[in-house]
Length: 122
Image (tube, rainbow, N blue to C red; front, side):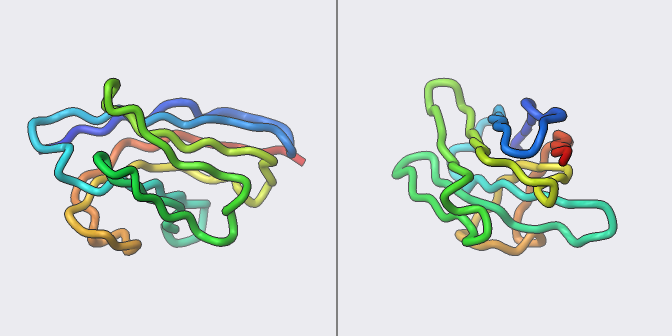
């Protein structure tokens, strides 16, 4: 099993920055691909980015590429989502997740954190 705990969300003005953290634990967490998702009120959960623990292979959706960066610190068992030039449309509950495959579909991810709220004011 895998346990995931997100942190780092908050309220920022448009153009500001935040860095989200997701601490992973459990005996098998390193076998999973790690992803970041977000869900705004009334909208479906959206894939944002993913990364592997060992090779650090990453993928980020085009709509946030250049503003968001996914990274990991293996020594801390933590992945990060760096967010710059934030926009009001980035407002959402952000989740980290772990899944066995290199996919973007939420249903393919097995473990989820509780989420951390990101609110961007105009």
